[in-house]
Image 1: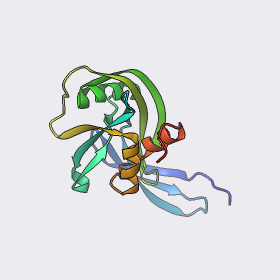
Image 2 (image 1 turned 90 degrees about the vertical axis):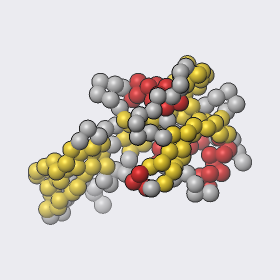
Image 3 (image 1 turned 180 degrees about the vertical axis):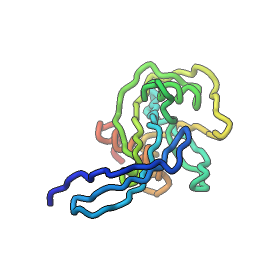
Image 4 (image 1 turned 180 degrees about the horizontal axis):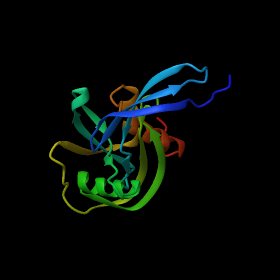
Length: 183
């Protein structure tokens, strides 16, 4: 089967705020049929896999309103205008945890549900950490941070307790680099 791009006929934004845009696109499919596609575009994000000298990862627990649940996740957030993903990762690590890192390495990028969302999160590995300040959370952030062994990540993933796509992608990037210990 020959997979070809769709042809955009018209696009209209039906909602927009500082974080997201919802657009309806009238497209022509490769078969020639017309189709209306809904896309959510969001500001790019950055997240941090912070590892200490004991090879423990800094994970966070935070209530997430859309899920009505407390979830495990990594420090991170949305990229501000004029900021690079690395600058965002450094800022978010400091703001959410009070830590700074001397070593930074790009782990990779994960696309957020590309069937619906145009938005990516770039993940960075941060090492040689030191406390720099106290956390400075935003008004809607209620976060706890805890150091966990990398083996704990595997156990929690297999138990179905970690479902966050960024944390799952971080585990995959770490495993691909051979940083996750065998059972």
